[in-house]
Amino acid sequence: MTDRYVIEDRAKNTFSLSREALVSSAVFEKEHRAIFDTCWIYVGHASELAKPGDFRTRHVAGRPVIFCRDKAGAIHALLNSCRHRGATVCREREGNARQFMCMYHGWTYETDGALKAVPGPEAYGAAFDKRNFGLVAVPRLDHYRDFYFACFDHDAPPLADYLAGATEYIDLVVDQSPSGRMEIIAGVQEYDVKANWKLLVENSVDDYHLPTVHTTWLNYMKNAGVNVRPPKEEGLLLPSKGWGKDLGNGHLTTDNVNFRGRPVARWISIYGEDAKADIEAIRRELVARLGEERAARIADTNRNLVVFPNLALNDGSSVTVRTFFPTAPDRMRVTAWCLGPAEETPAQRARRLDAFLTFYGPGGFATPDDVAALEAVQQGLAVWREVGWSDMSRGMAKPADAQLNTDEGHMRVFWRRWSELMDRAG
Amino acid sequence: MSDRRNTASATREEVEEFLYREAALLDAWQLDEWLALTTADCGYYVPPNDKPDADHRTTLFTVADDHARLVERVKRLKDPSAHAEYPPSRTRRLISNVRVTGHDGDTIEVAANFVVYRFRRGDDRREYVGHYRFKLRRENGALKIAERRAILDGEELGALGAVSFIL
Image 1: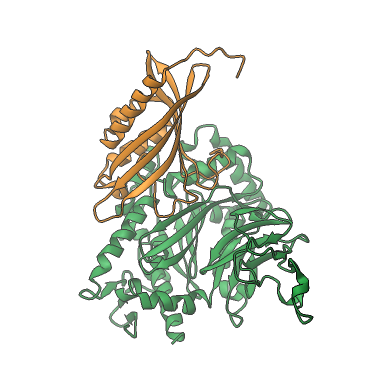
Image 2 (image 1 turned 135 degrees about the vertical axis):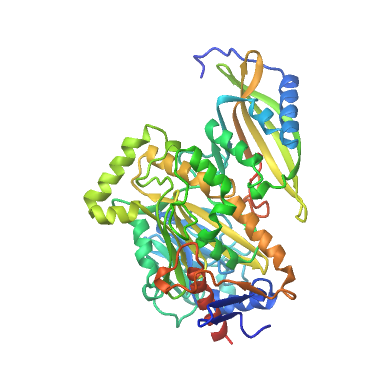
């Protein structure tokens, strides 16, 4: 392995990324320890566990986890592995449980993880204490405004500190709900991309690629009456101005003047004439609740936020919550949901879901082309021995607070943090 | 709907012939000719793998196109800038177990199983397995597609990656 993955020269404005970071098995192995075992990792959303006993099983940083609400209403993230011989004790995707029973020998656990019963207890010695054999919870679990994160590092800072400036942008999403309650809508998109997971971090916030990768989406928007021509301002490649921002601790976001349709207060013809008055009413509610300035901030700007290392909240044509884990150096598994205000009317909900599909997801008008781009990068990276470095210096000559969403300043934020954590792990 | 007279009917042979012709057009990327097989209110749906029976108005689908978006989808797929499908995938659709499952007014309900193989240069063969639910209607005597639902059997899309062509 090379000893440096990122070489930056601020005097010369160069930023080079070792392509080995995107292809190497050793890097892939080390990331588990250096990144996924030290950072706060997204697990799920409180709305997915509406009632006591509700559970969802999923993989978090390579571990099978039961994300559940116990009988008393408390939320847990339990490692889904029987304390007896290791089998997963809950094998269903989701549901409501009174208890979790291991199918192998029948050890049974409460919904808070406590061991309730084992068949034939008399065969165990007097020292066997059920209290020592509950399902083990993830070492740390905490939430910010219903987004639950786990951390496998006992020494990591608290979640609120970890999230740093990202909370401001999570707030811009959550405040779209009059009650401050957003919910995950049914229907999950789970798909593999044959590319290194870090390429999706870059892609989630890289607006430089929009005019080339998403030509057909821009044409679709144009056909729906959206002005997609960049204004005559030097350096603008997109229909509106946007920034790339450093939110601290490796978190980053785009922060764009909106030009696209948005279910929260920007009507386009795709939504139908009937929706016009309703979207005006949504805007009025925002203004009444939050004031003109805050309402405009929420509705007239959009953003793709990355919470380091692997959670993206894309608040554009709708809101998608997207997380992704590496399964190999050149492969990741993506899980994506649609998020919306809990109190939406049926018509508003239908519009949000429809707007989602104009852009996002494996059948959307844009995401499949992103996937094609990432897979093309991964194929090209096979030359890493001959062409060892990628250039990520775009915008570097400008001050940090002048980085556009089409520059690479926000992506450099990710790579610096990634590099720092990899170095720290030794 | 028992109070409506069933005015439509079709034999399995006619429906099979129709589905085979549709499959041939899609495999040949004759998308305009394929679009001509749809009614002006046609919907095309691919439900999410975890909720195959859900309603697209309350559940996030993989694809939920009304006719206007279907027209845009065809435009997109014919554009060399639709990178996920350029060069166009080679596909081969095998359709079987075709059944006329019901009639509702002027609508004929049809179910069929499918395997769609998809090939791209330098990529693994991908196999999309599932079943179709069609609603067909006659216009000037000819069968047309009023609704087309492609329901995948996989628990997740997983290695299939995307549904970037018309499934």
